[in-house]
Length: 431
Image (cartoon, rainbow, N blue to C red; front, side, top):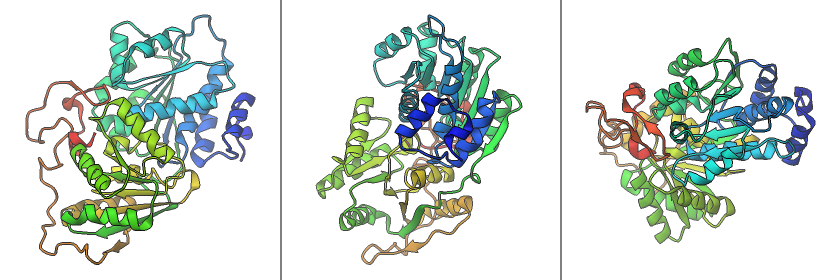
């Protein structure tokens, strides 16, 4: 099937051709037609399979087909959980809309809001936003979403994980009841399906791949290793392999900084990206990684989604995630758009339960290797990390402590512990 057969306009086909794409991915082929026909859509697909284009292309087509007013109200709103994902979606909107007379903008926390507001005041057809900054500007009467015709909730499961349910509900009440709604995500839990029931009207459900599966092009491997030898092992793997572009995931912000420092001492150019970094620092680190001036990008799970790095060859889990689904999102940064990739996990004894849960989720046993000199400690406990050591929830308190009041997270978004999914608690440091 070609993109032309999907019914997209000539300006969009021209932009797609310019990017070098010829045929739609499975999720694009399944999602674009019902969206063009005006249906609400609930879409699930693996990370890296092109789901962003799956909603941006038909969204742009629909908006370009309707008359434009002298003052351009926001007619399409795309809500994302993180700054990085917002920036990626906005980049896609700009690229695919290059030959259309549509205007777009992106807003998120952590940066000066004045340029964002000035841009929107000139008139914007498509707005990409994170919840906190969006509500902040709405509450100050700086922007309005009362004319939104198409609403997209991207990475909906991540939204719930990060405690944005109440924010989503507030945004919903500010938009017209009559609109087209689209929900896209890599995974859909029971809570997400419940949320979809409250947002979508008789949706068309599209699914390109089984939920929680990993891309076949990704070669996955586990190295069993003593906890104290992980740093030396990862430095050896990167140095001996002469790897020039490696994305490494740690569980905490402190761990990311510490690993970066040790890699630097070993002669490896590394940079960290996490919630304590300013937006400028995060943008600089990512730009350096993409350009090749930085070989290793060490990230917490804030980067598990929203990072679009073409042909990224290696992803390493320095520490396994507490939540199994995050493993799928992490390694999904490689093996994108049909390219091959490698995902390596360094697993110590206390992560044995995490590994077992991941294998159960993805439905396969991961091959295990042990390198001489980096053997696992036979006397180490296999008990999972205790609360207070990576098992805390995102508000920073243990599960049994009293919930904190609403606060602003690293993306400038309001996050309330009272709305968080209790069964999927995670460490605040991971953002």
